[in-house]
Image 1 (tube, rainbow, N blue to C red):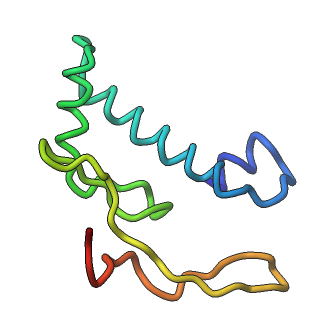
Image 2 (image 1 turned 120 degrees about the vertical axis):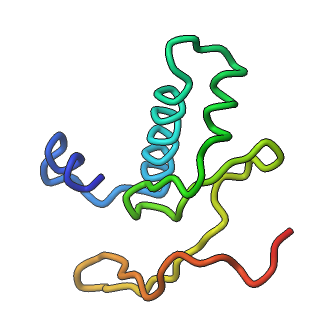
Image 3 (image 1 turned 30 degrees about the vertical axis):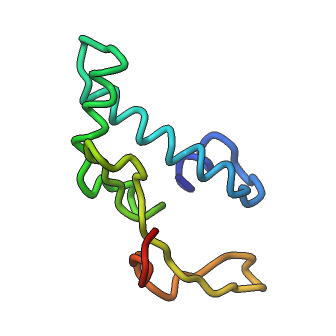
Length: 102
């Protein structure tokens, strides 16, 4: 994401959360469209999403999974520390599930 952003928007300021959310949503949508194939309907697209099992977003987010009974997508979080001088976040954990679920 950073590499492409820098290529098309050189010297850009750090992006807000919505930029990253949009990026991830677009990755998921593009993969769903590929998996749905040429006979695209709402049902084939949903069916394609339901084949996602630990779909990787390249470490931008945790793995994404859907099933016929679960359309939440991601369940993981990662903790970060802040580097004030570099104005960036540094991951201090991998992606992990919370201790409890709803």
